[in-house]
Length: 286
Image (cartoon, rainbow, N blue to C red; front, side, top):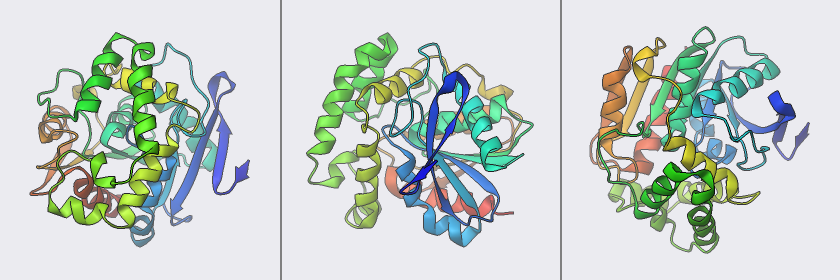
């Protein structure tokens, strides 16, 4: 079913997963794992680069986020790989690549860990490391949500609701990013800033429960080990990232056996994502 650029597919438990497509419809398939809070609309940020690289980007909403149905409470991040594999069957991709940004990084890694026979390569851009990774330089709001998420998804509901209320009233997009350096400020002042805000707001289209569960999953055992990943993984991270510490990128790159790390000096969270996704898509075009 397709409506206004949004498509859906039915996966296990009879759930509906919503997704949107960007880039070149005839290119190799790259599944785009949005950040937290985020949605399929994050694909707007990579559409132009995906077209230039000649890749087909498929950007799904995670369970309970955007237009996707909620999933079982027993899920872990590792289970996302099953949803992506079902979506790959639906769009006709026997093998594919995965790209995750920010809070979507762990979900991309889950695909690499759980379905290595289908994932040709993975990329993590400004991605979050697992619980226990060094660096606690998250924003105050994220620190509260992760702390609540470690207790339970229910505990994270109130701060997630407060975040939704805050996003609905945002006038200065720069407030979404912690202490953005100059390259990030320039991006946020233009179309990128508008796209970032729309993406985050769409995450709460059906309430705050899905976003709260995302934070709880990220703060809990992911269900796989980084050192067990056999798929090549490219990691990209801005040194001045004030939302996801650069140390998280180093941590992931050090522990995934077939990983590389590309560093962006003087770039924060948003500029790192913009440059990193462009580089990742270009790499995945072959």
